[in-house]
Amino acid sequence: QVQLVESGGGLVQPGGSLRLSCAASGFTFRRYAMSWYRQAPGKERELVATVSGISSITNYADSVKGRFTISRDNGENTVYLQMNSLKVEDTAVYYCKARYSGSINLTYWGQGTQVTVSS
Image 1 (spheres, rainbow, N blue to C red):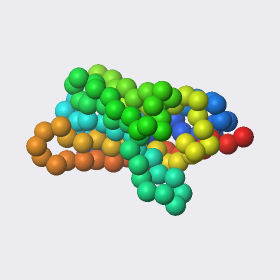
Image 2 (image 1 turned 120 degrees about the vertical axis):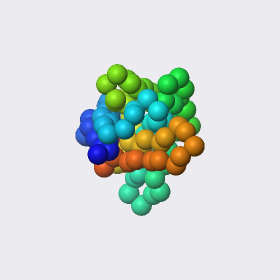
Image 3 (image 1 turned 60 degrees about the vertical axis):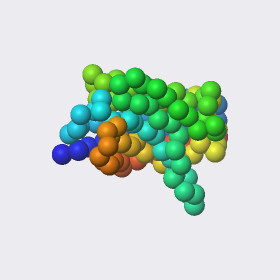
Image 4 (image 1 turned 90 degrees about the vertical axis):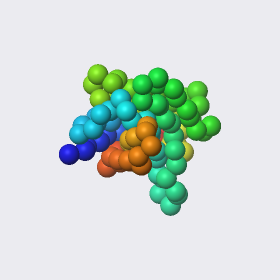
């Protein structure tokens, strides 16, 4: 059974930091590119960051470059999102996504974790 379980969300003041984790199980983790998405109220879900399966090449949305860092531990089947210098506009539900790196279209989503940036 495939599972993606996010954790680490919460309430933080502007300028603060949070570290999100996404624990994966039920599939061969290293064969999947892992991404973090977010969805704010009334807005579409948007891509925040992606890390590839084995080479761990990363990509970021312009809005988070220099503030967020995505990383993965293939031994622990976990992907992380370190979020620094948080802004009010970072408030959203953050979702973890796994996408198979091969030719078959396989995608899995987590249930999301709320991040609220407010003073």
